[in-house]
Image 1 (cartoon, rainbow, N blue to C red):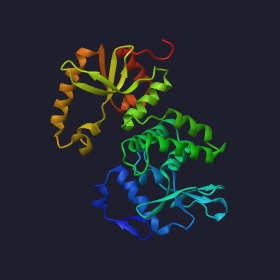
Image 2: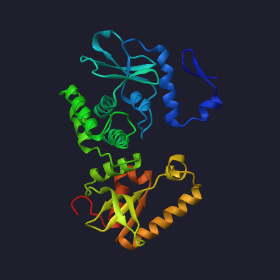
Image 3: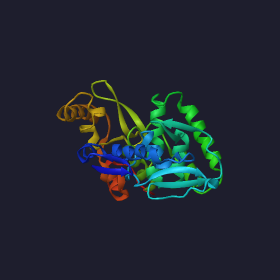
Length: 287
């Protein structure tokens, strides 16, 4: 048995069967027995409970926000963020008090790197736009994000958070797409159209992850999840997915000048991304 928290244990074989995201979520849930009444799960820990992605891995501790005058400090279990302002809206996820989805996105954006924060903001907007979050629409959620930014005021990380929200886009439906467009932005490439519509040679309409119509270029982020995750397989075998992707690409290629693909290594690397875009005919920087 492995200890998650004092008094909370899990069998080693059960832990091994969990994904990285599931392991951290279990850790956060296990902390519930040690929450103080002032603790509100927040930041990356709230992101985990909201089902948002972490492209650079999860923290080792559980993050919470507490009033400054609560007297509570960080310890081995909790990384506590103190606030002078009361949390305007506390929700419950899996029975635990958690910051709202909008507040969670803003907290992550204010305290994390631009790329990983954009991935979280894009994912939150995407789930809302697809009706996954009950009672929220893209418009109402944008308003909540603006409200959460106003609550932050000019405090630490406010400018960083505003930059993330201004850049976030609900059309990026996978972390690899979000990370790719951040890297494109950093190297000065023209912003692509997301979920770009292309009519193939067969007359069928397709949507590619990225499109630059001015250059006749389309491209796809091609992570392993497409060939392993049940969400993407949709009942197909990996071999069937590969075949379907080939047929799709063959239908699109005659209708564009160039078609490109890249993986996580390119999405994370400015140098590799610049090379990939140049090969496709997309200018980078001052070109």
